[in-house]
Length: 307
Image 1: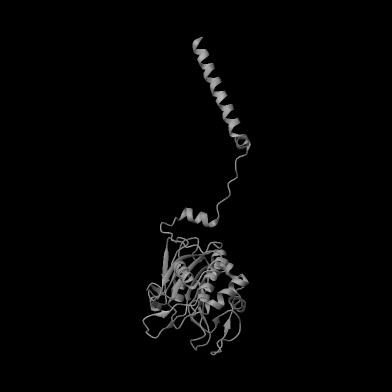
Image 2: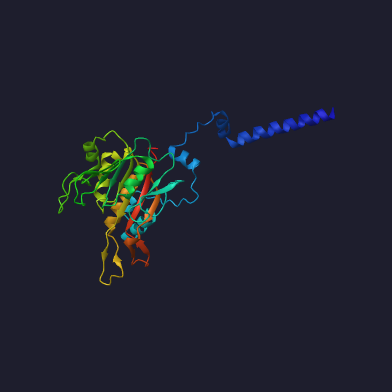
């Protein structure tokens, strides 16, 4: 009898404690108890990729809004530019170099999600008589490669197996270049002329000595980059030697802002840097803190929206 009374007292105490806790906690407890189980949002393609291929050395630099960057002075924009262009945003497990080990070769991601597929198409802008990259990607993936360079003073021809040369340059419009009268095309117009408008480009390589600042804005404006799976661009910022020739003047503020705005736009449409290379031939020492910097970077991207 005594044991039964003890059990009843314990149960009464627990019931009283529960009632007091609910009353003191307010309606939130009852609402939580009555709420259905939350629906989990499926992970994005980028989240899936990060889970499968975690990056142990992610040093991503996140760009602020264009409005915020517009308020920054030349020194802050310069620091941000060099930090950003030397950082990585996604992990590629297998980075391979196609072409020469030194100038002329380019780095690409050979991971299954991003590597060129069957019947792959490559556009390679900026040759200067060096077809090592173009030949290597044919040998590796058997892609159809179109090589472009208006400065070589040779006509259109078939360079080799699956490599077709065009004496045409890449720009932001379809007008001949000033001073040289080179034949220039936008990427959209070039694809139309070659019959590739509905065919995705697996690899786009651009090394066109600052014409990238005319060509890339046009590509962003037309939306044509959605068809690109991987892209490698050498970005340049022009410098001017001072009288001592020991230093070179920093690029102007507007140059840094324009380049950072392009990086911001590329990031927003899905392009992530997986590899970046400082070209030592463009080395200089900044007057601001005597920091060694370069003005030429070979930057390789993958498009996470086109896996």
